[in-house]
Structure formats: C-alpha cells, structure tokens
Image (cartoon, rainbow, N blue to C red; front, side, top):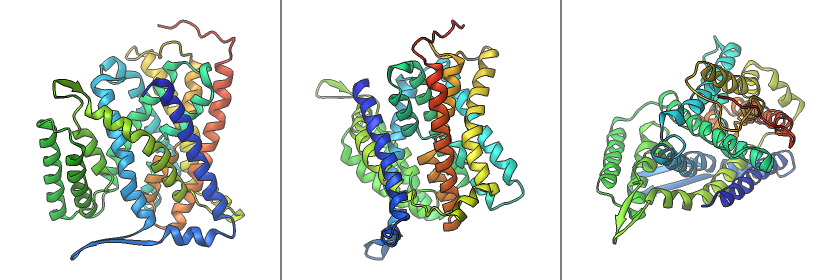
Length: 393
C-alpha cells in the first residue's frame, strides 16, 4: 500500500471511528437507549457437543473481533523490527524512550490519585495507552504542514505503546489459569512455530491453528486477544514459491488493514462508547479514578513523551527526528494523549463493574478529546508555514 493510500485509509478510519463513537453517545442518550442495551448484552452461544462458549455480544467483540486488531499490531511490529523503523538500535532509541515515558508518567499520575485503593488501582494502565489510528488521523488532517518524520516518530511510539499494552495485559489482566487449556494453547503456539519454520504460506493453515489457539487461550484465563499476537508473529516475513520471492506477512498486513481500520475498530468504538451523559455522570470526572485517567492522558502523556525524549537527547543516547522542532514534538506528545481504543479495552479488563467501567469510559473520552484539541493548537503554531525549525545535532 502506497504512503498516500495509507494516509487516506488512516484519515477515513479515524473519522469512521469518531463517527461510531458519536453515534453510540447519541443513541445512548436518546429513546433508543433500550435497544442499544439489548443489543449490547444480547447472548450469543457457540456449541459443539458438550463444548460451549456463551457470551454477550459485547464480549464476542472485545474477546473475539479484537483478535484481528491485535493480529495486525503483531504484523506491524514484526515488520518494523525486521526491516522498518525499528530495525536498528539507533532507530529504536528515540521513540523507545518516548514510549517508555509516555507509559510510565501517566501510570504514575494515576497511582498518585488512587494509591491505597486496590480496586481503583486495577485501572493504572488505562492512561498508558495511545490510540494510533486517531492520533495519526490528527496529523493527517494537518496535511503537509506536519513533517513526515513526525508521523514516523508517532507511529513508532504507538508501536512500542501497543507492545507495552500487550505485555501489561498478559501480566496484569490474566484471570485464574486453567492448566489443561494452557497446555492446549502451548500446543497451538508450537504448531504456529512449526508453520513458520517450514515456511508454510497458506493462510488457511494459520486460520485453522489460530482458531484452535484462540479457543484454548479463551478458556485458559489469559486474555483471548493475545492469540492474535502469537498468530501475527508466526507468519513468515519472507518466503519463496514457484521461483518467486514474496512476503506473506506484508500480504496479510495489507489485507487486514482496511478491515481492521474500517470495521473492527469502529465496531469496537460503537459498542464501548455508549455513555448516558447526565450531571451525575459528569460529576464522576472529579473522582480519583477519573482524574487519574483524564490527567494521565492529558498531562501525563505529553510530560512523559516530551520529558523522556528531551532527557535522552541531552544525554546523547537519542536524537530529535529529522526536521522536527521541540515545539512540534510537544504538539505530537499531546496528540499521543488520545488513548481511545486501547485505553477502553484495558478499562473493560480492569473494571468489570458496569458503573466503574462507565466512569472510566467517560474519563478516557474526555482526556482524549482534550489531548486532541491541545495537540492541534500546539502543532498549528509550531508548524506555521513561515516556521523554520532550527538545526540540531
């Protein structure tokens, strides 16, 4: 996919996700709210003999459909590490330090507000995530005024961010483990490794093993979406067939991108953004949990990304991206506070209680909106057509 086509896809995907979010808010604050709730909690069952999976539709989306989102993340991560923006230690340094700060500082701010409350502390990772789709949409909307290197930097930070979120989900949001299912999941991963070693390129083979792995992981207590990560990492980067060389990974990534960007993420946004907006719900923004999330995204993200980048550059272990000024970096650090998709996903894991989840969702949306507006304002000033960024080493 060409860079122009990818930018158009990012723009359309971001606007579609935003529209899905606004539609959910509109429906949940209208007479149609009852229908939204009915569909949201509609039970869906899959049964084969004595084996059954019974979940409401919202969990089929969050545990099932989002597997494709995590699969795409794994494909992008593997490609970038093998031959992309993260292929060399020098390329990794700047966005790596930025992402570390962008996760650590928001988590610290959340902890300051909620230390001593074990239930509230389950949400510490919510403000640590960046929504790559919506954040990049903001940069695309600003057009050629934003240097390409700034978009590349944000993409790399988002990749590290997603990797960190995957690790956090695996380590901190795993339920009680089922030994038999874990063994079956291990067999599924071994089968994926074998497919990779023997350079199997048929998509059907990965689909069959992937379905088996997803079911095993779902029943094991580990979050089922991590099956998508294992599948993505197993798909070969390079292969030869019939005398020609091609990339199964890139083919799979390009095939998935429009479906995930225009289908999976907007559907997830629609089913996870419905909040009844009342004075009472707005008052919850003053609670420690809500303040931790909102300020973690709006204040913690830019402080962490900008601060860690500045420190790493001053120490000489990293360098500012080419043709990027500190003002532009501050703007993109604010935009990175848009934590919508992954933040909502982690909020759902952290707060199974509907009321607590509703409050967390409102905080994520408020923090993301504030980050988007502040980021655009700073970037508009820092990328003025007459602006000429100074030389830097």
